[in-house]
Image (cartoon, rainbow over all chains, first blue to last red):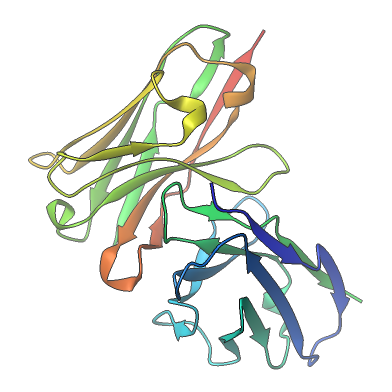
Length: 107
Length: 120
């Protein structure tokens, strides 16, 4: 299975901060990378698909990018509702696999 | 509005069986791949199984092959997961999830989940 190495595992940030989360796949996956966030007791919610395309209805402060073999999720200005756990996922070869998660909490 | 509603979870002993169901509405069910994704307590999500739009092709994660069977009824807009020979490590919230082939296979809609607890 493809491994997705996600970093950091957790971070503390303040409202208005710029936040960056990175994922590195264990093999080439083209741009088949998706990003989700999850709040306690809720299902994950799709934010970005195909590495950089914003899912309909998701605020534009979320963005995705690629640099070499790494994929990055950026939140340009953290809002109170963004405190959650974030996951990357590869959807290139089944089983789709997720990163270990990044918990974003309040500094 | 897309809705996915799971049912069938519960407490079962090691070696037992459960059948999960998912009722889909708000979209053309027969046009989409569907998935089961589980999440063990305190862990990240894990894709368990997927089925293509007409039910002719299925895939499973290695840990459930030979024990779980995914199926669908497009006439009734329902997705199922038959789980046999359950193990303690199958304990998780199981989500019914829509797959979007045109969006690079991303999982764009999720149900609220149903909890499966396997006890020894």
